[in-house]
Length: 164
Image (tube, rainbow, N blue to C red):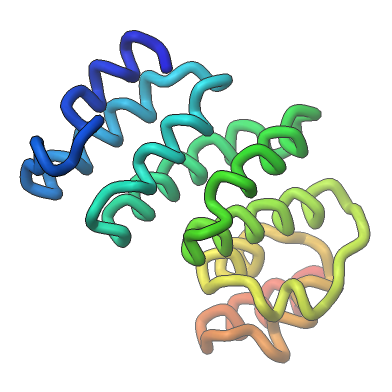
């Protein structure tokens, strides 16, 4: 871990000796993720996920995943980054789903093959984002018919009408 990132997680080596309020830890984790070198982010995520408050730790890691995945979405480095982080977050269902959804967004964005079942299993945030941003008729057609929320279905149907 870089010196900067280590400074953001100082005192977390032994949770029994140092357990500040979870809001304080969350702020420190956010700062550490903002400053960590890309090659050390997986190690930081692994450390954060050992926090005694799993939901808070998962949120901190997912915030990093969202930022970094958005930066790498169409870049050649995304697959390697995804593989590395998938291993790290494998025991955390929320982070695993988030990473899976980012991989699906990349696939759809790049026009690569995807399965309808993947889109229907995607979390609300991804279905909503695709409803608002995708110009792929196949995506919008599925979401207009079977998107998880009424809002997603309505937006998809409206955008589909405008595309035709």
